[in-house]
Image (tube, rainbow, N blue to C red; front, top):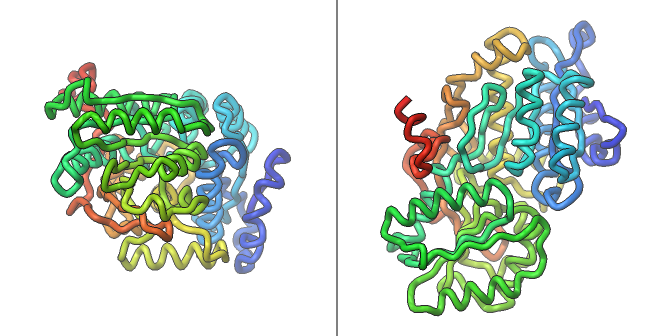
Length: 414
């Protein structure tokens, strides 16, 4: 069942029909107050292209959990708000969820600036947030569980791949990002990593653009000139949101092919590629911890569950959706173990939870509130899917305090 705040009535309607089609609520559900699940994702603005699917994933999980009998004999009720890609509004909506709607848990945020906007609210009001997107690390909060990748689970392995023989032996790197904390901090880590591998600053190009940036002609031209100075060059993209559509279009317009200047993206997956003609981008790369093309029984079930809910064969699955799915499962398991939805005992019960995830690996929540995750490199195919060309043999624990940030030395020793 969905509880809709007035501001999000229209935004939530897309998921309403499927939720109402769920099996009849068991009589015992009427005996207790519902468990309220907050959904804090942008349904409008520049990040809606990525975040709307995460709203739908939470609604799918709520419906499935209710169909299975709820949790502790109680039905779940989703409370959906739209922070509209407005970072201060994220904090307002987080406070609304916690203080007015009194949600038991929240799934939300995509950008690091939105997460940092809500973090003090969750800490002040002792809420529980599951954050499902790759990020720059350099954070650890008792009120947040990070189910996306830390830099050692995405960014660093991706650059190592670009520098390897299989990845083209890149000697120059163009770091292109949206101008906010995640790209800038990730690129600070990557620059230090590249320096440690003998790549000089002169062989690193770094440029940032605002959210929603659309005119990529000049930057892509500069990348071509940078690549034309005699060394094998690759692009590392931390561009977020709908700016990716004109960026990739401009790569195609200027004839940049993967065999000449390969690019690897950290925020482009199946959902973003669904909106563009992927044929000029064949061979370009993305680094994630899950792709829709993963061949595993758990992924077959996940994709079937998604299609049963969304009833649209054009709607794809992607990495942040899988991270939302995993986080929801871990939270539900922890509530059952704790015998309550109260934040403090649930927080304790989440540590050590394991899920056989769609990525084909068993993921575990560690004491630093981060998951062990595999790393995968995928090549874009003409149909907007990814051919997985490399992956780690095991899920690896997150280093949320990077060894390439000098001031973290004391933290790592501690």
